[in-house]
Image 1: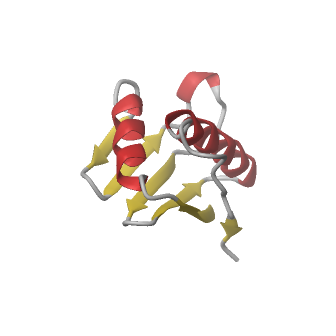
Image 2 (image 1 turned 90 degrees about the horizontal axis):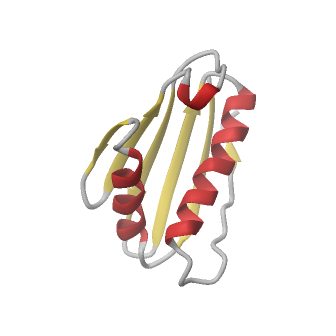
Length: 106
């Protein structure tokens, strides 16, 4: 299992979390409320040939959106970092570019 976490400074983390979870709920297994979200990407999502499912978890507070990705393989983890960043940035277009300080688990 490969994991990575990022703390994204923003005062709108709850809004982005909810928008993103609603967006992905049309095609993926999603659970969320105002401050916590969980999205499961199955191994065969959109033609990907991943070795297993991956889970992205979001936690929002007043000044930060915390994101954690748990993936079956490093390549899957790297791909999901990009997917998550692009989607969050799409919803955060009114803010300056957001900062993602990914930290891989040892």
